[in-house]
Amino acid sequence: MDFVNRFLSFDKLIGATLVKIFYYLGLVGVVLMTLGLMFSGFSQGFLPGLGMLIFGPIVGFLALLYWRFICEIIIVMFKIGNDLGEVKAILAGNPGAASPGAAATPPPADPV
Image (tube, rainbow, N blue to C red; front, top):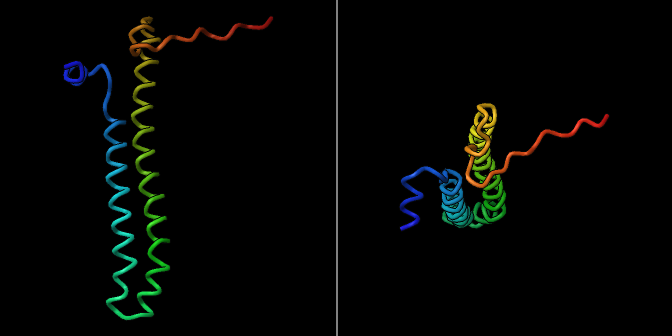
């Protein structure tokens, strides 16, 4: 029941968690695409199949890097939004409302 309350109250954002789920789904998709690419070349003959057996993992690796990069960009955007919310709360003079459990850090001491 606590999960439902957190889900409905927007106290904790679930965007980053959803991105991680989509990342794993995309990972499965990239692996299936790579396997399909590797073995689809044999329908054209032995040499094209051998070429795709070598070329398929390279394409799969590049696709995985691209997918990881896209997911990281989305997570960074969520973190920027969280940080901007904290900055807004601090500037408004209410640092405790920035986020639950986040402590405001005092400004650095001026070494004179």
